[in-house]
Image (cartoon, rainbow, N blue to C red):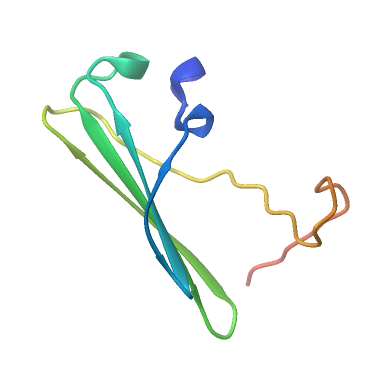
Length: 91
């Protein structure tokens, strides 16, 4: 999770979007979070009918470095101020 340098605290840039997708990028400098290499992270979110949300994450770097991204997203399903009481089941 990289502690205080975690990507969840960063401002991502919108690299592209369309009616069913959005692509975000983030540049991480050499040494940030204790990892070597300048890294560019790209996250593409896409929605497909009837009910599929997909996230593809890729990273490029100019030095060998460990990379293992995951998503711990919390989605607000009804537009209220919080997520308490929400449930989502995925088969």
